[in-house]
Image 1 (cartoon, one colour):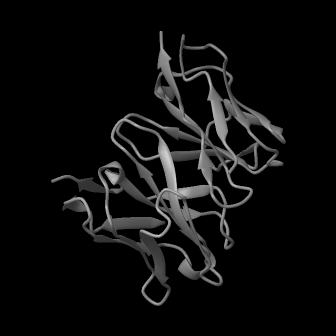
Image 2 (cartoon, chains in turn orange, blue; image 1 turned 60 degrees about the vertical axis):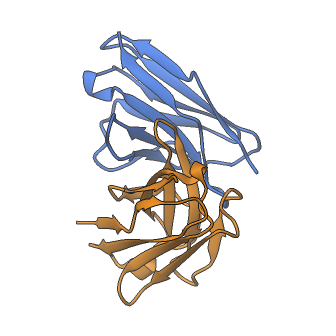
Length: 121
Length: 107
């Protein structure tokens, strides 16, 4: 059974940083691209960043480019998102997501339960 | 970047009705289109990928069609458990983009 367990969210002041983690199990982690998708309170889904399973190529939404960094540890089946220079508009539930293929940009067939990031002073 | 526009933004239908939600891409995306269902308070769930392929375990009353720029999600006979927000997503290339969502309610 595929499981994605996020952690690392919390309350942070504007300009602050957090490191989100996603522990994956139930599938061969290195074989699949992974993404982070966020959802602001009462709003729709926004793709944030993705990383390929094969060569670790990374991609970012324009809204977070230069502030967020995605990475993966294939030896520990863990996905990360380092979020820096946080703004109020980054407040959202951050979902870890498994894509259907190795290469980046694919449909997402599994989602974690999400971790809430709140940016407020 | 390619923009995805869904219509309508919300709709109300009766149990047993046929429901159609449309999604339009600002540029052609071939069949790199997925549909998701997000029930209130729940995590999104993949319904359809490659525009028309039903994800395993999804009821057959859901179907998808289209290619290029115009796509549809059809629920052939609306059930109470289908109350949710539905999102389309394009994935031909990064950045992945979601539509703004269609909120479906029961009359």
